[in-house]
Amino acid sequence: MNEANPDLVEARGQGAELFDAPSLFYLTHRRSIETWHSLRRPTRKVVDRYLMTLAEPLEQLALELGGRLEIFNEDARYPVLALFANADGRAGPKPPSMLAGVEWDRNQVRVDDPATAPIVGVRIGSKHHEELRQRFLDAGDPPARHVRDREGYQRSSWWPAFTRCVGPETWWSDLDGYRDMLMTAVRKLIDDFKPALDETLPRP
Image 1: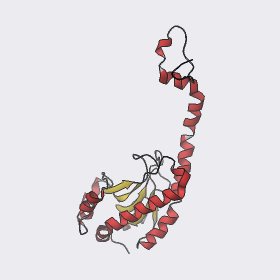
Image 2 (image 1 turned 90 degrees about the vertical axis):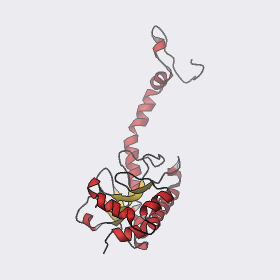
Image 3 (image 1 turned 180 degrees about the vertical axis):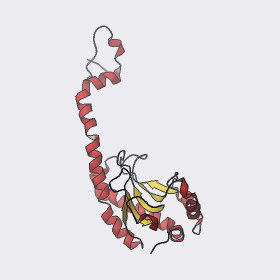
Image 4 (image 1 turned 180 degrees about the horizontal axis):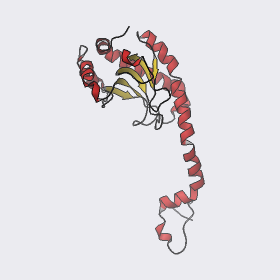
């Protein structure tokens, strides 16, 4: 028995010194660990289905804020729920050059992880849309770039202003609470950037 960790089955015999605590832990609990690991993919699918249910309250919020909900990449890795979107995306399922809304990575999303939780932000295509990005950042009074920095939004090559909606460690124990958290983040995003969106996005 390992006195420091009585749950571990110790290695005995010649070469036992090669087996450190992590390897002993894995060998002792291998079946459970592999069972737990096999649950990751189906659990991610459940989380994805839950996140897609956010389309309904987001649709109501979009109407309230003067936009309309559009879903892009519905069957792809990065689904997008857009409240405001440039008209160049309405001819197909792929995201347009610019939108404001919610996105997540189906392969990696973990709601309680600051690195992979759903994004709430303004998304502007790739490097080919640099002019549009600059137009958005300069729009509004004060300009969107100042609002972004003042309010603590992050930035990336695809997202000139975004935040991640990170839930508590046991977020699934209060799904309504997480939904409210995300709705609050979306509402704040639109409130913060609506002047810049109105100037940059031509909408019918």
